[in-house]
Length: 373
Image 1 (spheres, helix red, strand yellow):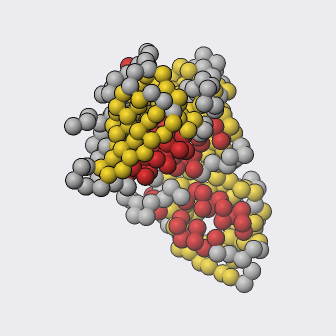
Image 2 (cartoon, one colour):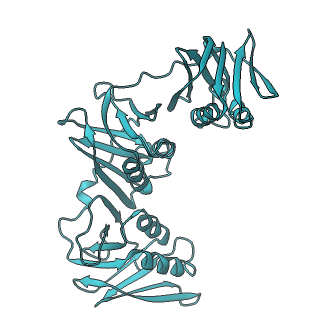
């Protein structure tokens, strides 16, 4: 293999592809990144059995070929190269990297031992990257960290025509985001369950100036593919039944309050200063005021009163402050509407643009109150 390539483009491509390689792969061969020089391109790929990553960049190819080398070391080398052309060449056992007056040699790894990359499924549809990234960020709020219940570590993605709905739950809260997209088949109706950490990793690595194409084969529902700016990833799906959560949303909420979101977050953070670990913050709604309080009578205490716009009877609810802040921080609108039925049933949080406008249903956060002693 003999290749001439732009140093910056090489460093960027290697960094993106090798990001999925773990510090200590279960199989040492998975520490490798494959380089293939062919048809005016240098193609890069990596795989860790859960995620695959493929990228390609333009290159001058004098001799085609394919090699496998340590991915993280290659990433370290390429990001340190001078801003000049880089030349790659191989012999039977080494890859030589030259740029300016710098020369590196790397030992080749046995390509025959590297697993085959998964086949990319058929195209399902596409959406602009910022919309997808925001939806993943919002839907991932309630992803569980309980590894003994794999389905709760996932995000359920439902494709219904031009609508995509992403949902996660850890049993104490539920996070749901939805957006419109352009499906290949306008009658599509299918569901996938993707590990939340893998989905976040893919979303973080997207070029926000390009659309995201999702790939999925309902007849072979084991992978979800993501294409963006010439980069292709696949993510293994979780095999299991996601809980039936739709029933948790109430048909009607007789008690509703609209609050400035940033003011509320600030007050919760102040209350959390005196709340012991996992202790509740109490929220007392009365008239057009919200009184927040925290702390025990024989310990430090705090109280703050906020002006609100409220409809319905007085009510007092209590929440884990971390869960409150995480859910409220995922809302993008300036105001939040809290919708309640009783002091012990789940409370729904929605964003809205104006204090007197309708709430947005694009993001719905459901949080179960803590019982007051």
